[in-house]
Image (cartoon, rainbow, N blue to C red; front, side, top):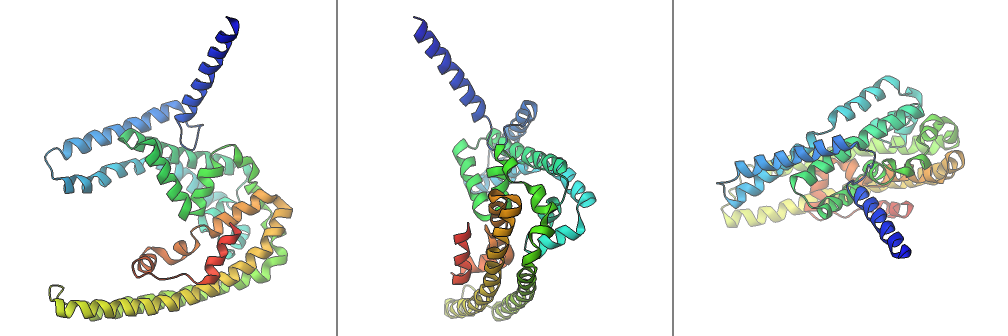
Length: 327
């Protein structure tokens, strides 16, 4: 009789542990009161949505759903503000400028130069913000699978979010050694400054040229279509074909220019990766590559140009596609 009781007790313990773990999405250190508060906030937002859409059409309900659902994004911004203020006051200007030359975004460049205690405090606060927003979505009525799918989507196009959600908000954080990446950047990057500068100069020159091509194309298309009657089929169809042709030609030029950036970026990655790995460890080197390369073109293009690549079927330069091998 003793053995079945022990097995039953073990099952209860395992089941309890699994249930407790299941309460969280990315940050298990979120305090229970904040978890409950976030879910309650989402539940109240959903109640407001139901009340406001009671006598509306299906289309109106679908439109308003996003407005009420995005209330969850309001949660946790006090924590993000704390980190922003910390970064503004404490970051090391010489070191973060070196990281920015590599293409690390301004906020992360500054963040990585903070003392280790402040890095950990900052990550805890950013993880708290993220977990609260996800718990709010759960309270709103989104299923766990929907939220997990949304998390995967965030990780696919944003290197900083991939690091936060995959490594920073759990026990893997201690392997990243961010204080080494930022604090010792002048040491591990010193033999790569020529290729870093070459990438930085190419990036800025090419980005200006790309921006001008895109602006000129949008303006030219705008002048062609400003007097267009969309209900006049004979006028609309040939103009649409012309506009698509103009944009596709511009996107080919832009993709070719992006290839120059990607070639320089590849050379830089080849140089800094072994140097960073030697100084700070393999996981640190992998983290920097994720930060630089995940969603690289999307981040560089910004929203409007990216939407034109998607809408007109623009193809990435092979030199940019080749960057995927590093991650």
